[in-house]
Amino acid sequence: MKLFVTTFVALLFSVVVAPGLTSAWGNQADSVRVILEKLDEAIGQKDEYLVRKHARIHDLRRSLERTAEPVEQYGIYKKLFDEYLHFQADSAVYYLNRRARLLPIEGHADWDEEVRINRAAVLGVMGLYADALHLLKGIDADSLGTDLRMTYYHACRTCYGWLADYTIEKREKQKYLADTDLYRDSIMLFASRDLDRDIVRAEKAALGGQPDEAVAILRRLLEETDDMEILSYLNYTMYEAYEAKGDADRQIYYLARTALWDMERVVREYASLHKLARLLYEQGDIDRAYAYLNCSMEDAVACHARLRSLEVTEIYPIIDKAYKAKAAHERAVVRGLLVGMSVLALLLIAAVGYLYYWMKKLATMRRSLYEANKQLQAANRNLEQTGKIKEVYIARYLDRCVSYLDKLEQYRRSLEKLAMASKTDVLFKTIRSDQFLRDERKAFYRDFDKSFLELFPHFIEDFNRLLVEDGRIEVKPGELLNTELRIFALIRLGVTDSNSIAHFLGYSLATVYNYRSKIRNKAVGDKDKLEQEVMKV
Picture (cartoon, rainbow, N blue to C red):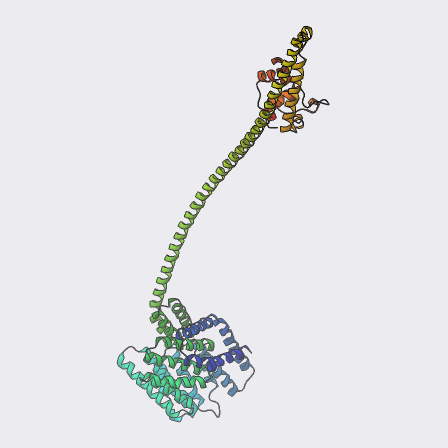
């Protein structure tokens, strides 16, 4: 089934796609690219094709085991010979010898000559041209039937053609070419099929300086033929026609198509692939040329095709040297790129390190700036609070001073009235009394307490949190602040000097020291830092 599908696809390509490609060369480069990609794919699938080839051979061998009839055995051996002829020459010889052992077979007298012709063909594949010609010259063509006679002429043309390719000496080469042309004429004269005559006519035109005529004939034949072996030969002849025209792109195109058919037919004795490799090398496609040449060499060695091996070895050192030089250049470029990338990587690492250093430094600067900003904000709040304190106390003490002046004026007038009324006893009693001063001092402290608690409404609670639980201060009903709280209220306002506090409160210096020491001893934490904590309340 797989073989049928493959064959169908191949035929569809030759009948439908091929004419379009050969008739529409509006985008020649694309056509060449597409066929080369197909050939690359086919070479990559060589193992799959080989499996199918071996499957066909295996089926023929199984058929051979199931028959004992000489005629049938002969036919199967012939098919096995055909499978191996351009695939593995020594195996082809083996099955040819098996055929020869069956001879003579009654009613098939010409099979002896057929075996000799086939032996000449396989000797030619193996490069034993003298032995092949010796066998062919010993055959009387006039005694052969029509079909076998055509086989004989094809074998002679092929053998002389190989000799012409193999020979370097110019005179001998021309002689072999002339003999090859004679057998072409014989094929044209005795061929029973128009196809055979047209193929030879196209070949003669291509090699005889009339490539346009050859192209016209071959294009028509490509549209009419579906035989894979013939398609391979037609495409190769088309290559020869465009070689005569000097059209390199079409030479590549038709050699690639020839090689594509050769790959799918699973033959190993062919000329297309190494010639295609040479053309691609000349156009600078070193990688493909090297790959095609290796494939061609591998197949020629496996087939024991001496001429093809020699043809490959002629060009192989040139392409191999170019491929190695290209590979060395690519390695040098890669090394250069790696060195460049390494240098760039080192520079990048250095840049990252330098950037990290400056980012770290910037982070430190930001932290410092943040701390400075916090301190500035705290200072601003302190200044704002200090300004508010000053504003409140200045306003209140201005009012207090004006009130004192009014009270002193009233007090003076009351004393003046007592003096004018000659109430000497009452006057002296009033002068000697300190009730007026006590009342004013009490009013002064109440006003101070009220102003302070307006500024710091939670002072008492916040201050008590700095003291141990049993040492906290409770204010009596009707009081705003007591003496201990008033001392530390002054400290919160920035009055830390004990003399100033004693003078303000009308206490002795010792009394102030005692109060301060007593409260410090009740501190929750470090008693020496109590007054600093009070400043933060």
